[in-house]
Length: 208
Image 1: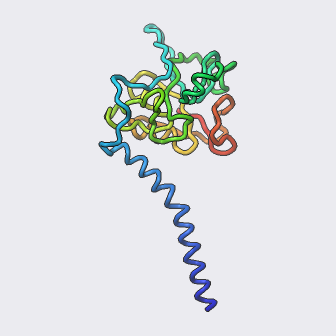
Image 2 (image 1 turned 120 degrees about the vertical axis):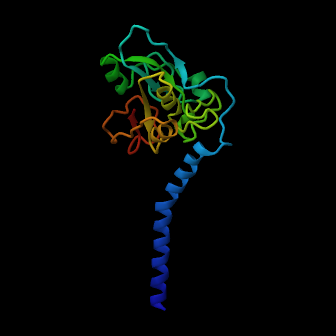
Image 3 (image 1 turned 30 degrees about the vertical axis):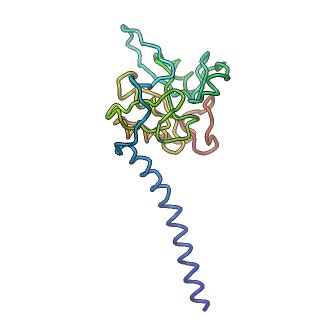
């Protein structure tokens, strides 16, 4: 009887471990499958919606064109996090996020704040308020998220580089969907001061 109890306990422990290991992968694959499912279509739009705010670069400028996910504070600009409420009620940022201050000192040219899933909590890249950025590889499919606008801007050559944020795939998923390179940096390597928090103590990162 004791042996049977131990066997049942081992089976239950094994199944629990499998669930903890496999389910996150299943969820990710399911979401990514939306990139290849014809019916997974964003809202109808006549143009790409990569940017919440766009500032055309100077034609004669040789500076690096940098787009910034609208989850990152830029002095004088409202950080909306893709949210209608924040767009209407939040005040402009008083200072640049640390990562932008460093970028500004290096001489980049900011070309805009990019669209994202509202509050950066969906990997589809869809946004009901600002509209969903169109996937440059197939405009009828999702761009991936939450850093959807950043990936689309680079894929469309509207920016040389775009800053995104990644807590659980928010840079890597849209990069994969849109055919560009995305990187989740080591936690703590790039300062996250001035970035709308999702899981700031362990997981939030900024990357290209």
